[in-house]
Each structure stands twice: as C-alpha cells, then as structure tokens.
Image 1 (cartoon, rainbow, N blue to C red):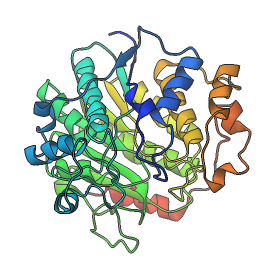
Image 2: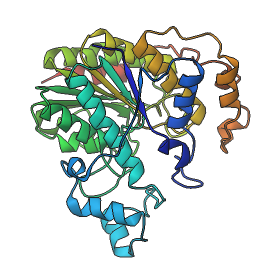
Image 3: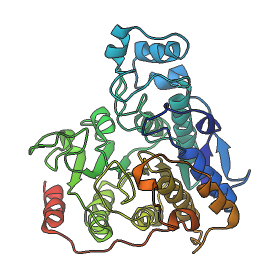
Length: 376
C-alpha cells in the first residue's frame, strides 16, 4: 500500500453558494492551500477529482432529480420544481455550479473508494465530500447530492463486506442513516448536537437522531448537550465509537469529518478544540483498516481550514508545528469573513493550527448517553 491520498479540485476555489450564505466562505480551497503552503502536498499524494457520472449518481439519486440539477445550471427552474426538489429555497440556493460542484465531490468519493478497495492507499481524504443530508430525490441542508451514500455503495460494490460510517458533524447525519436503514452491511453512528437541525428543538425519545433511534438496528446516535468539551467527546469516542467499530468488524471505515462542533464555529453550541477532532482521526488510523475521511460542515473559514489541514497531518503522521510558516500565515490573514466572531479574532487563527485544548468534567448526561447507546 502506498501513502495517504488527498483529493480536491479547483472548482472549490471559484464557486460559491452566493453572498450571505453560510457556505460563501473559503473552506476546501483554504485547507488545500494551507496544506500546500506547509509542504505536505505534492504530485505524489494529490489527485484531482472528477465529476461523478450520471450512472454513478443514479445508484442512489433519482434520474429525474439528476436531470433537474443538470438543467438548473443552464435554465432557471420553475417555482413548481423549486418546491419539488427543495432548491432555490430553504438554504439551498441556485448558483452557477450547483450540479458540477456536488458532482465533483461525489466523483472524489468514487475515486477514494477505488483507491482503498484496490489497496492503492491506506487512507484517503476526500476533502470536498461529506454531504450527509442529501436525499434521493431532493436537496436538504445545503447538500444537493449525498456523497457518503454514493461512496459507501461504491465500497460495497467493489468488495467491502462491511462499512462503518462515523459522523462527527454537529448536525445529525440523517440522509446517510436513512439511505442505509436496516442494511446489515453498513453501520452508522452520528455524534451531533441535541435539538439542532435536522432534529427538532423539542426532540423526544425515538425521534430521528435520538439515542433511541436505531434505524432498523444498524445505527446508533449520540445527541450531545450544548457545551460538549474535549474530555466528554474523547469519552464517547473511546467507550462507544471504538467499541461499536470493534464489535461490527468492518472492512472499511468512513469518517464524515464535519468540523462545526468546534468552539469557534457559529452554527453550533458545542465547544470542541480541533485537537479533539485530530484525536479521532488518529484513533481510527491506528486501527489499521482502510480509512476514508471526508469534509462536511464548518462555517468559520479559519477554524475549518486549520482543522482540516491538521486532519491531513494526522493521516500522514506529521507533527503539528507550534507556529505556522510565513506562507500559511499570509493565507489566513488574507481571508475576509464578515461575521461578528471575526471582529476581534484570536491571534491563533493566523499563527497556529492547533487550538488550546478544552478539557473539562464529564457530565452525567454523557455517561447516560454512552450507556443507552450500548444497550441492545
């Protein structure tokens, strides 16, 4: 097996969801540029993604929906179609690359699956992937297609007997769990903030994404309380995630590495440092199984770029530098983010990759979650 592979594409540099949208920020492109500036990326470990083909996309999505997406790039959709496909409304804007960009993320997933299954890489970072809310016939939660579903299907088609899907995005990975409801070859575990969309604020026992939600038996959910700290997160990974992975005995692990659970992110009330995210990546890598890591949520360009750059370092066993070099620092200082969190930014956003750790006590709710999730 060769070295870890990083998959990205120039489309992430030139496309945007539009002014004012939470995703109208540099994320994939910034992280990719940081990795390059740090000297961790070259022609030997970088692959440019391709667009997934129509045949690949309809392995999960409906033909009508894929045709709509392709046409909507060229012709403004009707009001009827906007409602039908949930595009142009509900945070899913119409923009020039609305088909090509997600299709490129999905193409990266197809490449990643093949690299892993044909022993061409021990782990792959498809940084543009992770769109876990997308449904078969419509967009949802900024996700026009569902890259994790399509990638996991590819893994199964090319020889994987069992795939474990771990989702650490602050939002419940509803689309992916739904797609594999009752599928005994795929186990999904989502760690997310309780009551945050797509969950309801007044979530009840048994609701989607609740700790009682088992999706036909092949899923677990850890809806964590606000203020989740590194110690609590580590505890859940050690006592639940790693235990479930061991018991399931997968051939491949897919980590949806959304980073909106970071303390600096504006869209959650969780308080993780990026060190906690990196520890998950390292723990999974140490299992010695083929590992596919994707991007996902994250709405502060500084925290996303720095965290994902550190994810790549973990996959390669690279020591995180105490301070960034001049090129990496200049990249971060050149970013403009119109948000109140950026009015008085901490210096570490520009000079270092690592956050200060956020250790703390483990609350009773966390112990209860772990116990309930492991009860059959």
